[in-house]
Length: 178
Image (tube, rainbow, N blue to C red; front, side, top):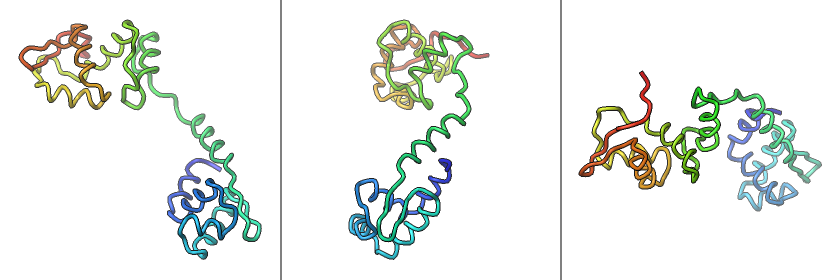
């Protein structure tokens, strides 16, 4: 069973509640109905559909969830997914960025200076050269990346990638794509 099929099955609220109740320890139709708040008829219909799909074993009123199938589907989906595009043409930079940037967000600010500089040089590209940004706008642009905007602002200024004067910032360093 693939991940898309599982997601489709769980898109129905009743089936989702049945799976949740089974995952939390319910073992019969009655126990699922009690813990989920669903009518017994709805539990039976959802359990039958889940059993046909192979996620649940049903023997009379007894139910058993095949939790291992969720993990197997997730692993198969991860293996089938295309590799993410590298964030840099330089292999060393790409490795650093892959470690700290996930889904367009900075998962943590590197403590090691050399890695932090790589991340900051990537991050500063959101600022257009020649444009002046008030601090509020700088914060909004940086918040998309990481919640600690004050630290990112300070690091960008300290590394000479942004310059600040009277609460206004502008890009003063880093590579510019042409």
